[in-house]
Amino acid sequence: MNYYIKYLFSLAILAFFACNLSKEVDIELPDYERQPVVECYLEPGKPFRLLLTRSYAFFDPFGLDSSFFQNTLLQGATVTISYNGQTDTLYNTFSFDPSPLKIFNYTGQNIVPSTVGVEYTLNVTLPDNGGSITGVTPMLPLVPIDSNVIEFFQPGDTIARVLTYVTDDPNEENYYRRLLNYYSLDSIPEQDFLASDRFLTTPKLAFGTGYELGEGDTIYTTVCHITKAYYDYVESVQLAIFGNLNPFAQPSPIKSNVTGSANPLGIFTCLVYDRDTTVIVR
Figure (spheres, rainbow, N blue to C red):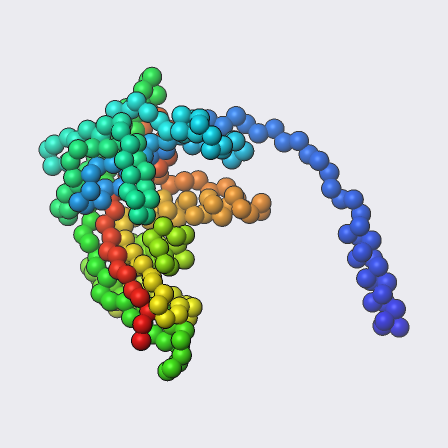
């Protein structure tokens, strides 16, 4: 009797899923107004550089043909960064870092100083009365990596993990971004997450991998000391990516720290980090 009931129940489920429950629905989407996007990271010891682009709507074609740079890059803007009573101009010229690859379309002639506490002010005037963009950020102190400790799963085992330790200042509210790359800095990060010291009970902050590394593997560990504005920006970008991949998620706005009449998106921040390379050996 139980078998017969189960059989009927299975047929009912098959009949339910066999029904044509799909229906095409046309949704009128509002016109999307493209916005200027600023990415400016002040990296001590490197030139002042900035990437200025336009945003795309979710369903806009994103072709990589010859018109890609023309449709994406915002050229012809006036860009300055002021600090300590001086103003540097960033010229509309291309520059890049080879590893990891970063591209910029505005570059200055001076080097970013490493003086902690200096406040930088960004001013961008877009061409053709496109409006203005402003932003402010401080230079943070470097938080160095204390050590990278290799731990094997068991004595004599070949599988290991790496624990990274940094010392946090308990008198300050600090935020961090941890990046972990295997084999190459240009590889997709195995880990990319944010952390704060709000719940630390000791001055030590630890980051770890899983037991997934073998002898001879190379690991690049990067720990960035970041502002609260950059923390919020990266978190909002990650949530927006998740929302785009999940049809049931709510849209997540980007939390930018640049403002102005141009209605911009993006981030203007310092990029202070320590990076260490670890090779798994016994």
